[in-house]
Amino acid sequence: MAKGNFVRPASRAGIRDPRNSTFVARLDDLERQSHRPKQISAETSMLRAEDVEIMGELPAQEPLGEAPAPLTVASRMIAVFSPKGGTGGTTVACNLGGTLARIGKNVVLVDMDLQLGAVPVALNLRPERSIGEIMRLAEAAGRGPLQTGLDRHASGLCVLAQGDRIEELPEITTDRLPRLFDALGQSFPYVIVDGLRDFSDHAVATMDLAHLVLLVVTQDVPAVRAAARCLRIFRRLGYGPDRVRLIVNRFQKRAPVTIEAIQNALGQPVEAVIHNDFPLVEQSLNLGALVGDVKPTSRVARDIETITWHYAGIKDPPVTAGFFARLFGKH
Ligand SMILES: Nc1ncnc2c1ncn2[C@@H]1O[C@H](COP(=O)(O)OP(=O)(O)OP(=O)(O)O)[C@@H](O)[C@H]1O
Ligand SMILES: [Mg+2]
Image 1 (cartoon, rainbow, N blue to C red):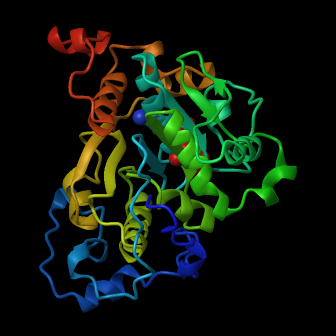
Image 2 (image 1 turned 90 degrees about the vertical axis):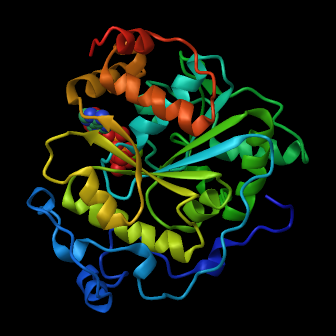
């Protein structure tokens, strides 16, 4: 982020929870305004005509400011956004960060759900530090990196969450977030953020700093509609498809809502999928472990590896158990 260039998200006021359907124009209103052919096959019929829209053809809506340039420090900041509860944002964020940590990268996972963040639970950690505390230390460090250690998962992944220290919440103001993430960015080459599921000031201030926002969607109509609504708001905030990327979690080849239908509905490509395997993901969450530690040869573990190397920009990924499974055709 260029110093002094930060746009206070309050200037983008009026943005509310994307699940609040009264905020954004109804999809079928938009459909009526954009006269384009309906390309729905029997296979994709779970999504109705009004769900299919091409973002570029949407009626112009008032922009809510331009997205500032992301953090300029040498780190890569990736924010994971769940457009609807339970699409798997926390699972993706923990496993993306943990997979990088497992190959020796310095990574911090920040849980921006300040009140009920699920990262510590998903990783079976009881945080000793808090976002409020680290924010104070980041300010005390002037313009430099953090001078202190953070909570750490067995994979080596560092975790920063607010935990139970709700008395600090009023101190965690949006204008202090750039310094916090700047200090983290100087200390860690990878900063992953979870707990973003709305367009609150905190969420927008955080995403304004991120290089990439991964929008995690599942193959069901409510999730796709919620994702469409979020994408429209992202566009108004100045985030194009280069900044917001689509991932399908819990992928099933035979699901009635196909990848093609999702791409049609959202007007941008689905870049990656993570297969559906509830028993395995649930087991890893119950153990506070990474999917790749519980079953390295599983499809989900391999999908997560692929996503991790891709979004972390790792050109020469290490040889892993998943690699051998691929080589010998095991699932
Ligand atoms: N690839 C997957 N296959 C099967 N089940 C999955 C997969 N990914 C996540 N789940 C399950 O979906 C549930 C929700 O996952 P998770 O908590 O990661 O979602 P979330 O988007 O972070 O939810 P929240 O809205 O509460 O933040 C969990 O019970 C998890 O086991
Ligand atoms: Mg979550």
